[in-house]
Amino acid sequence: MRRVLIPLLLMFSGSALAGESESAKTVDAALAAAQREHRPVLLDFQAQWCYSCYYMATHVLSGPKWRPIEQRVRVTEVDADSPDGAAWMKKLGIKALPSYVVLKPDGSELGRIVAEQAPQAFYAAMERILAGSDALDALKAKARNGTPASVAEVLASYHARDEIQPGLDWYAALPAAQRTAADKDARVNLWRDRLQLEKSAKAKDDAACVVTAQRVLAADVGCDRYYVLGNLLGCSEKLPAEQRKALLDPQRAALDTLLTKQVFIAAPQCADQRTAVLAAADLDKALGDHAAETAVLDRAIAFVRGKLGEDFAKDRNLADNLRVYLVRGERSAELDALMPKLMAAYPDDYVYAYRYGRSLLDRNKPAEALKYLDQAAEKTFGANRLTVAGLRVKALLALQRRADAEKVVADALEANGPWFPEEAAKLKALLKS
Image (cartoon, rainbow, N blue to C red; front, side, top):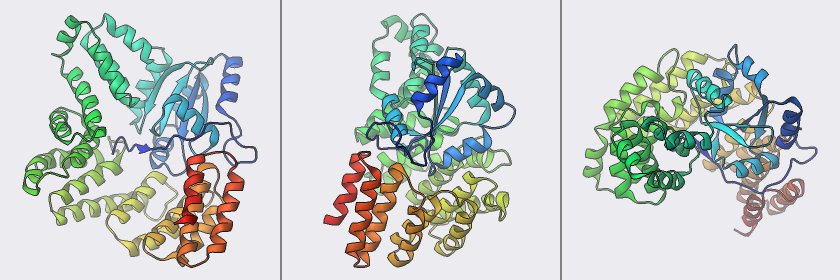
């Protein structure tokens, strides 16, 4: 799992549909306003289903440090599920949420920040961007005659953009003398290894992935440790059980330390607490330690409940983490008790009615699921309209209500128009299954 990062299917381009519930202002409109105001645009790519976006909104994009940023840039929220949002995600190569991209008024990029960040890291990165020193072209120019540290900055930037092969190609094209010096730098080696790790993982080269992941995990990767561990878990699945156990067992101590010192504390230093918990549970499962797997989930559930009590509107990121921990722990009775409370706490969007309906459908309860999926459908728009429609169709077909399923498809496609053709095709295909 990369940076939580929630992977997205990049969809059909276009501008926002009139009458949709997404923001009335398109990115083009924001750029036009920025040209009049002579200031940059900060595009905040988000979605209603993005738990990391709620973390950033609650813990980072607010308060006294955020207000000066709002004065210096035109902040524009971009919904990934809208046609305009999908078009700009494709144009800018955005592959995960949340993502923050700063553009000059002419549309050229000043820099970007990807995934959850602790406040200190986010604001330091934003200052570099607004100073004009964090754009990839500027970083590469600096690295031509710079130190190994500047080379590492370029490699890290390519990694953040998920431009893996271009980053490796850029490094390979450096003058031999500069590469020789850079090869001796620990930070350069770390980021080059991380690019190689992503390349081998995507290519399903399990042997190279295992070796590179071990090298990365031997370095100080901080809160990114659980993302790298996710790579190692994935590319070691086909190993013999004992060999895999010997490979993974040494990772447990470092991950436990990370959880204790940087996640399960009053002010967590790792922004993405959810992935840390799930990575730990997955590691324990891979090691065959069911008691430890249960214990880390129990600890996470107790931690969240201790912070929220019964006030689920207090912090949506934590509230959604609780839902996921209960799902991962297969605690269905507690999940059934929680979901109505989440729907009550966040009544203005489709997300929790949709998630609960999907959960019930996964448990072969189509009649119960349909009630919540119909409720969710009333608040959908853009891409998520088609997603929810697909689940409604599955529930209706399971209930032998084909005519109703055909009407759901027809209505969703009519409301969708020409947008998101791949999702529309998948929806129509459900009637043929």
